[in-house]
Length: 370
Image 1 (cartoon, rainbow, N blue to C red):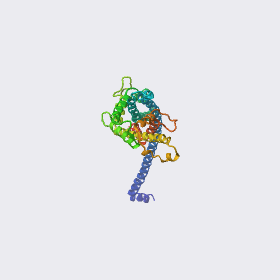
Image 2 (cartoon, helix red, strand yellow):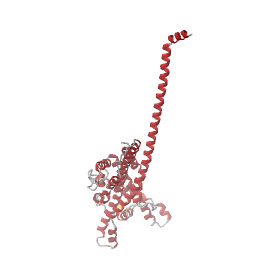
Image 3 (tube, rainbow, N blue to C red):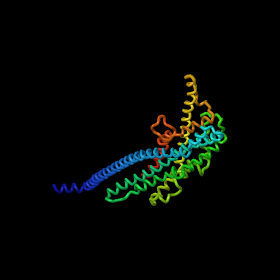
Image 4 (cartoon, rainbow, N blue to C red):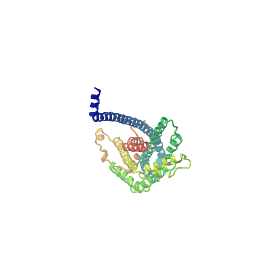
């Protein structure tokens, strides 16, 4: 019996070896595939959780960004109103002085300068803050993930971005409002307004289409010089040329400052700023159209006459357009007023603009994942 068993094993030894190898290999491959599947599932779960955390952090950054924009935007608008005030001119005109024509000419320049500055400065501020806050948000997210990894490995690693650095970095934009950047922009805008409008007599009739063409001419004049164009040279107005002496933060602050300058001078930022400005002038024309309607309908004697008005065919003398332009920019940001004034409409539109949001998202993605 044993000899027959021995002979059987001898004859079929190769089969047993092959079968063993096949079975053993199959088990090994099964275990290997099972482990790889588990690793892949764990990797996908980690990536999903990281993406979820990043999305939540980005959304939180966006909310903070919107609040900062509206707060600083309101401050910017008030600074423009103060620097481009027409109050003194209006008071002098009420006295019916002998130099009334000269005062009206100055009123013309000041009113259009203020309106144009509203549109340019608001767009530039929104683009700058979107870039700054999303760049900072990206670095803060990196700090969070680095800190989380170090905790797992029982290491202590201080974050790159402390509160002092954060505050000093965000304070750089104060240069625009408080340290001369806005004044430089106003001087540029005023000089171009004078160039474009000096040949327009106060008696010249203007339709809304004429006003749109006038605004387009102003944009072309302001953007004509590559060295001073507010869209492509935002850094010239928004930030100091180098870090001020009172700003500390060392190499990290210098790195963030240089990155901010590069981003503000990028084609994407310039394109977003320019697009917002074009839309801003459209909002101004829409607001003027409402003023035209209100002014003319109030003079109509019958409801039929009011219904017959076609605001696009109406022409108004420039002297009557000037008070309308001045009134549009006489008040600052106020989210509670209905209907919204121009300052509120501009800032609100720039905040919710898809192009502005995409710019911020791209900046955040770049600096949160490097």
